[in-house]
Image 1: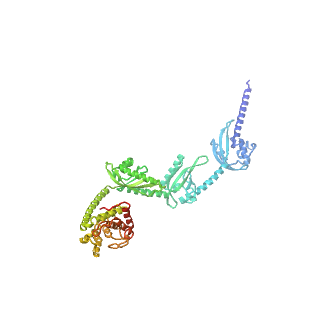
Image 2: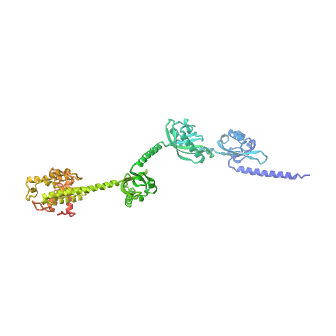
Image 3: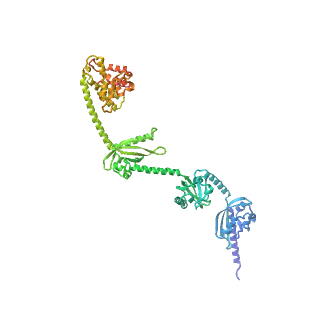
Length: 604
């Protein structure tokens, strides 16, 4: 006979092992924080975690061996759950994160998240279902609150906010987008992007969305043209990112659209302006250039080829200020630049200032060319200099013309000087007693003019006029000019006409100075008592006022046929006494300073 005790013992051992495994599994299930139910293949409850009973407020005896739909007086009769369990699980082994909202009699309305797994049962070949439950009611409430605030914020912003599905249809948008596109909310809902843009820009939009989808990275600042409901065209700048659900699955796109039509117009106008001015710069004879703040070329017009023999590309790649200018001109340019930058750092800066320098530039063939360079700063929005723009002009011919002009002027001066000397000699031959008088008057007048700070050009004119101020005496009989006794009234009247005669002789002579008027007015007094026209005050030109004082000082201090010299002190006393009456205040003061303070002496 076979021993039957061994198989029986084996079955007992298996049962003990299974009981231990079941107890172990039950302990694991009871430690799970989230509610958990184990169902058999008929969807009857095999077991549930302690957290399940506590959360749904039911007892084990009310659930075990019960259909899931009948739990708690059928409170689990949830259509969506029935569909999941009866339809999906026979075809699949799992389902994840199915959201269900239901009104439970024991705990009220809740939102739960369901996850299910089919696993092999320990005994037998049938399968069991493990159903995990997560209460997300509070989380959804917070999400809804945040979404409500989020929607409110979106309605308040100026930019257009939108959400679209993968087909490009609107699922949400704010009022700003409606205003931008010109449609009502009802019209815009469900519209496709192809309905408010042309074919070219619709393709551009698709490419941008496709890039976001493939990379998962947001894209910023791409532009596209939209067509409003009224047919007008506007430009939008958009930033787009993927929109995802709570599980992280992409559901569409969201983005911000800004109306940049005005900016686009400014950019287009600027480009048109740049094209126009670039055309102008490229075709003018003068050289336009731009330097950065390190004095490196960033632009130079093609006319540099004519001026210096270089192609623009050669200048941009190789040229520095050292290669551009001769040493002396480089020193002048750097010194000027340093002074300007020092001024920029002070409170005395002038943002509108421009500078002009004459600089000698190197040519490609080794020669040099003289140029006039006018430059100023290009500034940023804070008025800080960011680059230097300037214009260079060839002034070689101008310099040569100036040299020729100066040579002509010098030659003319010599000719006029020689002519004047002839006139002086003619006067002195007629009136030997006043020999040297005109030259000495000219010297005194020039010294007074220099003391008053008059420019050199005026001083040169005063010297010329002083040398011939008595030229009108050529018309007076010699016996009157050299008479050793006092003149009669008629003779003195003739003498006084020499100012008018001198004017008549000089009035048609071409000169850069008012020679004729100086001669005409050198005996006029400030109070109107002079001759020949009784001019006064501002009617008398400054050169004539100076000449009048110099003439009196020299005449009184020197010998005359009808009297001995009175001396310089008497002459200065006369000037001081009639200062402001006969003689201009400033001229008299300068004369007195010369002789009394600075030691000026008459040339004998």
